[in-house]
Amino acid sequence: YAALFDALSRNGLSEIEAQGAVFDPQFHEAVGEMENAEVEAGRVAEVVQKGYKFHDQVLRPARVIVARGAS
Image (tube, rainbow, N blue to C red; front, side, top):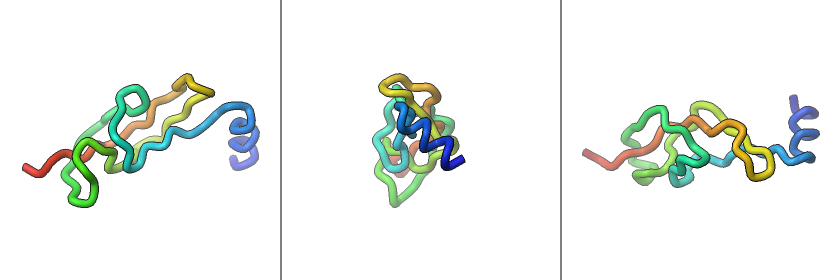
């Protein structure tokens, strides 16, 4: 896996950084939301499935759970 990912990375594949990032529907697919005192509302609280892009084109968005404000 590491060798394959390294080879693909050298040719333009990269993982979408999601953990703690501001939710962006261009790169993230929200599959849920949760209250989390450690994460600001509107930011990614948990990554369910990694996302990938090839150069600037999204191949698969990161599936994430987004933090919501306290009720």
